[in-house]
Length: 161
Image (cartoon, rainbow, N blue to C red; front, side):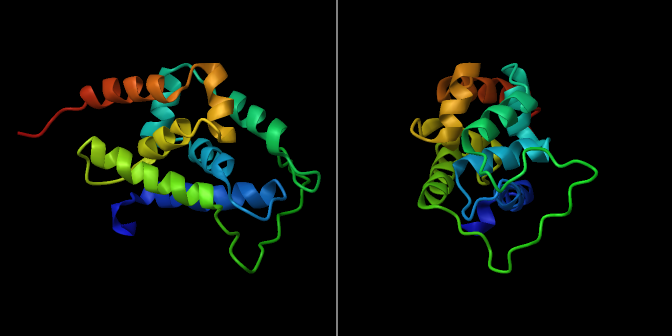
């Protein structure tokens, strides 16, 4: 199954761990995955968010306001010391594991042989109980609007003969 994930998704998951540590958390939750997608700044998920008029900085701020830990940092400054790496990898929550499984299902439902950031975004939005979905929804980024935007973007791609 790991082979299905694109290199960008793998990078996003590393960024999610970094965001978790930056915020002073000892776990990687769905909110960190969304922060990882935004931090990456590229990929189809970011194109979808842009098409929906969702500013990355707005989502980042809304997420940080909800989940920032007193020991974490909101925005690094030039004078902020580097975050020390925790020797043990920060564990993914069961919700993140479920979101990864849902991302695989989203890709399969679309008859796509890989899991990209767009599938992660769909999975995050589909779990309406997650902090990510609750932060995205007020900005008009619901599962339904994300899927419609994604299909419009994919429809614009040239197809090979």
